[in-house]
Length: 152
Image (cartoon, rainbow, N blue to C red):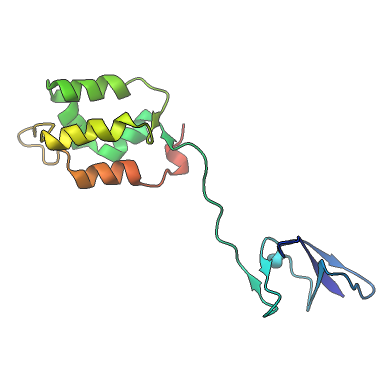
């Protein structure tokens, strides 16, 4: 006989083989030895094994300076770098030479919003996408999921 051992929440955490019948509320009989049920929830009503949704990522949303620039894109980074406007200079000073950029820092959307409102940076002639930054781009840069390769 094969069994899945479950938690009080009915989530399988082990599979075992027994020479005899096991009659226990935390042991669910299986048709065969099947480790794929580990981490799944047993539905007591249907007898089916249900996959659990992935746990939310609770790590800080920090990315490297390089990942920050990749999110903005070459042309926009060039536009900000070439700008002499105080807001763009403030953006450069605030984010350059950091170990990481915290995408959830409260002043970041404010500063980017000021850039949107002021149509900054001014576009560099002949370099499409160098400016100004748009509200959609801000949402994309700040709202995107943090990928493993972006993390410090």
